[in-house]
Length: 407
Picture 1 (cartoon, one colour):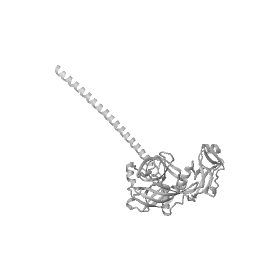
Picture 2 (tube, helix red, strand yellow):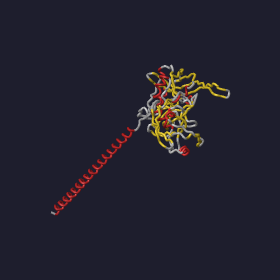
Picture 3 (cartoon, rainbow, N blue to C red):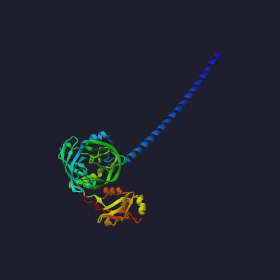
Picture 4 (cartoon, helix red, strand yellow):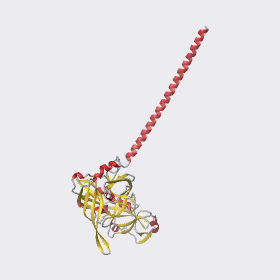
């Protein structure tokens, strides 16, 4: 009996331990399942959050301006060079100029080296280059990437935008046209590349970024100093011989014509935007020139703090009218130039005239801004509302925009 009792007690103990173990396992399993469910819920929440953030990011990216020409992809420099180099040519001209000396006018002859690139317009091939490359030229030649050279003929040009168009009797197989998209969507900071022939080193490529837009520059042609509006400033190094070559975006398309560097600078280059080329090319090809360059007929300077202090003006930005051209658009509209000459930091100004601060309701802070607005949006014959400060008071004057006369 004692033995049987012992067995029964042992059995009871085993049963109790088994119940406890099963209960523990059940509790552990329940807790584990709950923890796993919680973990799954957390992962689902994280996934939902990541998906939401991705949607926000995609929407933000889709709302950003696309590179000029809607190139939504970027190519590396090797690919761009491979695509574009065969389109770039060397343009060499012999120029004749007249120089005034103490012995009277003397004729000078010089050789000018530049670049150009092929475009397709109305199913015909043309070469676009700078006006100053072919200005006063008695003969010009074009050399393609493979070394073949041909005589070139200028069919049209426009000095105020430093654009010229030439043709050459090369075989069709030598022409590889580049695409010309609008440059309106170009943004500061975008990567650009210049291909040209600096110092005669044909087929050279340099890389930089768009440094600024809407610049106004002056350049020296063979015959005179001319002003160009709405110009791209970029950092890709260029040198003599690059003039007339293409400035390319990350899609390998032309957004401008390289035209000049700032004197004594490094990495400050300028290019005529493709919007200007597209606007003027048809007229240059068909009629040999362009007749729709807007002009107000003023000589002006940027208003600044020092000028404001000297003149007593109540604005520190805008465009100070120093002179109006007699009979010109500004003169006919009653805009006023200055009457008194003053010198500030070694620079002479004619003060006392109106200060332009807006055009058609758009704020104008500098002469660059004024000339860029006119170049982009206004044609000769249009009437614009010019906001001015005169004697400390704001008023608007209607001006009928004129056309720039031939240089």
